[in-house]
Each structure stands twice: as C-alpha cells, then as structure tokens.
Image (cartoon, rainbow, N blue to C red; front, side, top):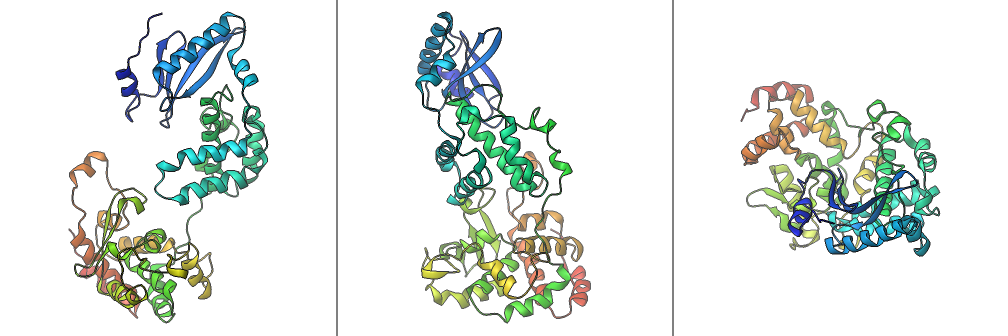
Length: 408
C-alpha cells in the first residue's frame, strides 16, 4: 500500500486555512477536517454493503504513525470478518453523556479566554440536557436530542441554539474517540434543519434598552444613589463598555493622566486590545472610587466583597432597586442606547460609534488598512455623549448636539 501523506502534509492540514473534507492516506485511512476546525483520524470500510466510518482519535494527539497502526489493526479485523467498531466497543467502556460532556468541556477550556465560558458550557449541558446525562453516548439518537430541544426551541431560541451546538460538539468528540459512529444526531444542516423551525424564523431575544431621550432624567436618579455598583453602572454608560469589561477592570489598565482606559485583548469579546477615551466625568468617578483599593495595579477598579470584582448581577441589581422594569432597560442595553443616540441624535459617523462599541467594521481588507483606532475622534464623541447624558433638557440638547458633532 502506498502512503499518500507525509508529516509535512499533516502539518499543512492542521492549519486554520486547510480545506474541510477527508484527506486520504490510503487503505481507508483519512484525516478528516471538519468545517468547525476539528481534525480527526477516521477509517472507512464496507460492512455488509454499507460504508462505515470508525474514529481513530483527534489528529492533535494521535500521530500519523499511530493512526496508521490503528487503521492496519482495523483492516485486519475486517479481513477476518469482524466489525472493528463493534470490537472496540466490546473492549471499551462507553461513557454516559453527562460524564463525557464534563470531560469534553475541560479539554476545550484552554481555548476560552476566561472560566465563564467553561461554566456556561457546563451549566447548559448539565441542566438543559439533563435528560441525556445517564444515556451512553453511543445510544443517543435524533429523538432523544429533539426531546431536550423541542421544549425550549420556540420560547428560548438563544439557549436552544447554544444547547444544540454544544450537544453536537460532545457527540463529535465521542465519535472521534470511537465511542459512536454514523451521523451526529444533533447536526443542524441537512438533519435537524428538516425537523425544527429555521433559526431566522424564531423570535430572537434582545436586551431591553432605555430610550436615549430618557437618559438625562435617569442620570440624575442614578447619581443620587450611593455605592460601588451605582458608580460602576454610571462608568459603563459613559464608556459604552460591556458589563464584564467594567467589572473586571484593574487599575493597571487606567491611565488617568492621559485619560485612557486600555482593556487587554484577553478581556475583550473580540480578543483584541481596546482603548477607551475617558471623559472628565468618567475620570471623576475613578478618582472618587480610587481610595477604596488605593489604586494598586492588580486591584479591581470597582471592588465587591472582600476586595474581589463586582458580581455579574451587581449592576442589574442597581436598576432593580431603582424600580426600573427589566422589560424597559437592561445593563447591556445601555450600549444600544448609546448607539441609537449616536445614529439618531448626532452626526458622528457610523464607523466611529461602532469603534466605540469595539465592533469590527468592514471586510478583512478594509480592517487591515484601518490601522488606527480613532481615539481622539472617539474622545470628542464620548464628551458630547456625556454632555447629553448629564443634561437637564434632553430635547434642547439633541438639537444642539447635531450642530456640534464632528466628522472624522
């Protein structure tokens, strides 16, 4: 048998730009490159007239030489009239979905920027897929997957969509380890897409956002409240930042002299460093709260109990204590409020507002040529936003702002 692959070929197929599909080595051995980036060794063979696929392990941990050994062993079994998949199962303890899901999540954890993603995956698979927990991964079929998705597919479309993708990932891992074969029952394209309503036809949840015209009145009520959480929420509004970025901020990220907050890449959703211009009002909040921790570089800017950062629910609790209905406003929704103000009540360019929100604008080529982050232009926009936010007469300021905005 002539081997078609070399170590260099395998190395090239491990790169991100490798073409999805099966890449043959000969004798039924293939390196499968999935559309989601998974690389695994598989052995294809005919059994009773049907094509079967046997997982031989992930390509990152199984070498080409080892994959060839496993494929050779499987070929011998086929020649002897033994189904290698059945033989492997007979000699291997098949794990239950719940335990195996925990194992998969832990193996994926290093690729996530913080432990929050790991905890979210664990919670989703343990709670929303609880019905699968004690079923061995080789016995899970389409009906069982639908059994956990259907009850929440229409009422909680975001949760259901994430759950489906995570179940698919766990079952793909089970196949790669040889615990199951055949199609993935949680696969969407060409499978569940024929059994469940298309995602775009579902009602997607949006974070309730306060109308920007209500912000001046809201600012007065918020400023009257005491406490670290209230100041953190005010800072979030002035910077148009995400809750996690504000709650996780450290003093080492703040340059009060240059009035710039630099959020490191590992704390940004897009994984890219983000500079935030600090208005005089935002800097005042920082100066006022600094004595709580002494401004030590590793100390949280907005400390919670025992010097730790504020909890995930702390900012939402401020709105609740202010008796603002959850259906009318949310912490994350203030980013939308800012975006609406920028688009409707000012003449600042769309690109500038999107940059303030740390959103990518344009295609890859356009982004490559746009090297700068327009910090000073964004500073002017955030100053005008702060003036509006703290103004007493919203309508008058909206008219005035349209005349003061500057194009880049």
